[in-house]
Image (cartoon, rainbow, N blue to C red; front, top):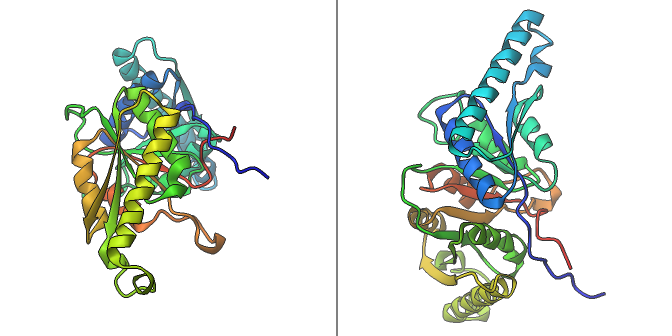
Length: 299
């Protein structure tokens, strides 16, 4: 049977979590700009967890929570339309807890946008539980909005790649860059410490392993150019002993950092991966996490 070839992806509608926090408000405005670039609609989602609360809270309390959620959605819609008056904006008030509500709203082809910190917990924490839960368990791409919203745009999108298996989600990163009329920069970190003492070093010297990585990343860049002929694509293999550190530094010079989410080990429970987890806590720009099951279609 012929192997499946990824198809050029289309960016789906945007769903943003609204919770009344400053980070959530910033995420809503960022999501509006993203939807506008895509030519897609924006759905504001507020999941108030009243389905669970109804087991112990009074009917009046539940109605107050619902009314506050409606007001918040209206206020956010007004703020979005102030900046993007022609954008198609819809609102959804969900009774589920936030992670489940956002996952259900986005379906199978949307993109979820969340702020990096919500109202709950401690202000000093760098990532909220909802943001982490959605990024870990969603079946669609999740963008966690981080960094200074007033920072000038760099005109680039960065994809953190490893090898040939990344092509499916990499095309989504290319579509993000194309929608922005930005350049796409592929960055792969070759960590020498990952090979020292391994069986690999008995078979090939470290220079040969590095050359193979450079060749694979160059092939990825060539494939992207085939799908997006007008897109400026560069590729770099960085050498260092800290993959997260190099990618955090790369996030200071880009508008969006995209990476694939780690696959589940032996099919057990969802996982985010150490590098993605660190980036969601420390990156200087929004970070997009693409789950392994979400790849470009086939043709």
